[in-house]
Length: 319
Image (cartoon, rainbow, N blue to C red; front, side, top):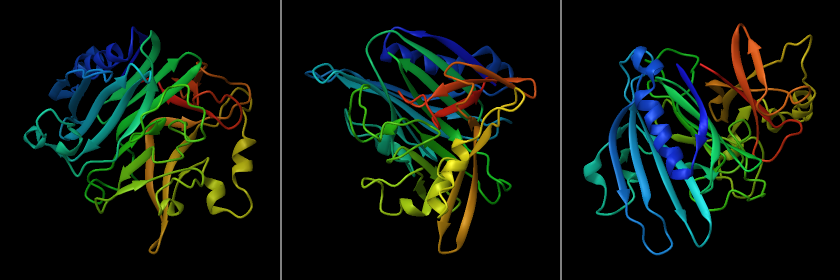
C-alpha cells in the first residue's frame, strides 16, 4: 500500500512517474505488491501526433499470487492541443499480437474498452495511490481534477465465484480524443461516470459499462447498470439521488459511501462489488484536497473535473 504526491513536468513525465511508482515504490516492494513491467514501447511521433508510450503492467495482488494485467498509454497531438492518458486491461497480454507499429490495446486477452484522463503538456500536481490489486491517479490540470484507476474491485463473494473482477474507470471515454478543457456533461470522474468511461469484467467474462445517469451516447444496455450512490435515482421513481445530495458531515464525521456497482438484468438485481479505496463524500464542509480521517486513516478529497458543488466530491484512501 503506497501513496505518492508530486508534480509532473508534462503528461509524458506523469506516465514515467506513474510507472516508476507502481514498479519501484519502497512500500509496494516491501509488501511484495510491486507491479511488474511486462511491456514498454514507444511509437515514434508522426506529423502533429506526438510519440505514443505504451506500457503493460502485471499487478501481483495482495498476496503475490494474482496476475492482473493493466495498460497505460500516453498520446496526443500538438496541433489539436490534447495530451492524454488512457487506461485499459485484460486477462493476459501477448506482445506478439501487436501489429507492426500499431496500438497494443488488442494484444490484451479479453481486453477492456479504454478510458482516459485528459491532461496537458505543462506541469501538473498529481496524487498516486496503489496496492497490489489496484491503483488510482488524480491529476490537477489548471483548476480541473482528472481521475482514473484500474484494478480489481472488492466483490461480495470468494475468488472461486468471481475470479477476475477487473475494472477500468476514467474521467472520459477512451475512444474520443479531446482537450482537458472540455466542459461537456460526459467529462466526469471516478464517482460519477456518464458515457463509456467505467467498465467492469463480470463473473461471466463480459465487460459491462456503468453510468450514473442517462445519456444518448451510452451503450444500449447501460440502463441495466449503475454506480451507487450517485446512480441510485435511476432505479428509484422517487428521485433517490436527492437523498444522497443532502448527506453531510455530523460531529466531524463524514459519511464515506462505498462506490458500488449494481446491475439490473433478467436474472434480477446483482451487486458486483465496490471500488477498492475510493468513496463518495458529501460536499458540505469539505472541498478538494481536504483530508478526512476515518478510523485513523487519511482520505484525500477531490472534486469531479471542474465541478465542486453537490454531489461532486469523492475521497481516496491514502494507503
